[in-house]
Structures are given as structure tokens and as C-alpha cells.
Length: 63
Image 1: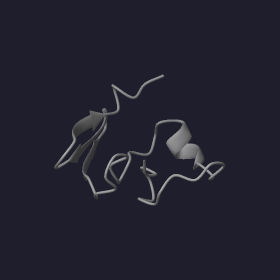
Image 2 (image 1 turned 45 degrees about the vertical axis):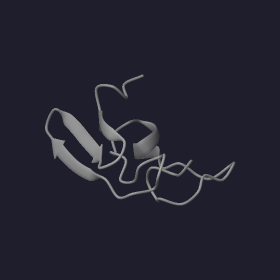
Image 3 (image 1 turned 60 degrees about the vertical axis):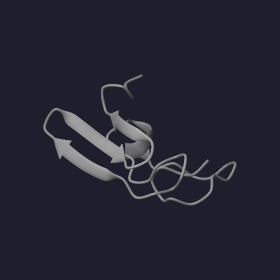
């Protein structure tokens, strides 16, 4: 597993940016393969697409 914001392997206790924690910042890297994703931001949310693992959107990430 990889960090969605830096693309580096996940490390226990690694800091998470406040905007990412709140769901305001879209992920830039795939959590499964660390490939850079295609990200589109709109006034209503964001979508991020990995060429291998599909698409995420801000609506599916709401808590």
C-alpha cells in the first residue's frame, strides 16, 4: 500500500495533511500501485482515475 498524496510506501505514524484528512484534497497517487492518477477538480468535488485500478470520487470518500 502507498500514500495517496506522496506516492511513497505507507509508513506507520506518517503525517497526513489536514486538507487530505478532511477530504478537501484529492489523492494524487494510487494507493495500490503508486501510479500518478489523472485528477479533475470541479466546484462540486473531484475525481481521480488510475489507469490500472479505476476511478475514485469525492462523493464515494465522504465520511
